[in-house]
Image 1: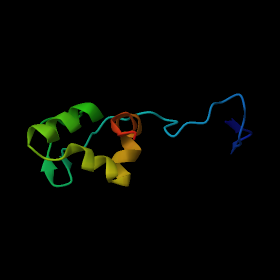
Image 2: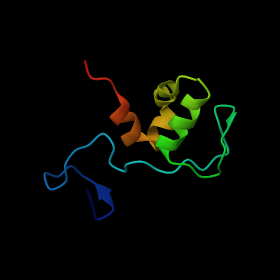
Image 3: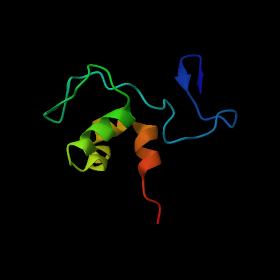
Length: 80
């Protein structure tokens, strides 16, 4: 949490890997693949990439995609 302009740990705020959740993909291209819409949800992007017979979850390995789609990528992780 932030106090006086400085971020500090606090028991009042739960720790999470995705403190800001997911954002919207706003680029028309993603890793050289043109997207069908200017703005798409993370789930919609992964579904679209899958429809192209590409391995969508590989996008979650990219730090830039994962930072924008943190919750979506985390929900797709295979827990062994």
